[in-house]
Amino acid sequence: MLEVFTDEYFMRQALREAQRAFDAGEVPVGAVVVCGNQIIARAHNNTEQLMDVTAHAEIVAITAASAYLGSKYLPDCTLYVTLEPCVMCAGALSWAQMGRVVYGASDDRKGFMRHGKMLLHPKTKVEFGVLMEESSALLRRFFQGRRRSAKS
Image 1 (tube, rainbow, N blue to C red):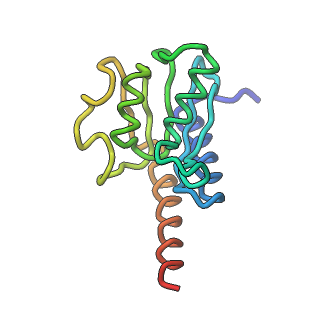
Image 2 (image 1 turned 45 degrees about the vertical axis):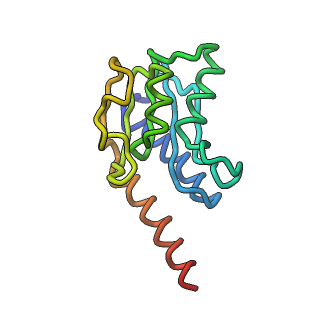
């Protein structure tokens, strides 16, 4: 059977990464970088494990994709991420000249879109809402568990 590589297919791969973060006690955000219909990088949040506030899924994925391609610029790549990137990650995506960013859930508090698409490279295309419900549900489950633990 031939697999069809759609935005949903790749976002499901990012959701798998988000589940890995969830299982590790990290905020469940996952990302994959795709180039030519091939996943070249996978990552999830690692801020707790590494004790590094910059170890967001997007940053780790950009680093891995750049290493894979041997280039700091990624104009022919698409980043799929389960949560709207923050301002820090949008800056990194701009510097990497990411060709396209596709995200699932919006982040009304810390997401870059509050500031407009201008934070990204001018040529970067943005799509959002892909598997939004699944991405949002995983985040809600994580934070509900955190709130229950805090009450105990």
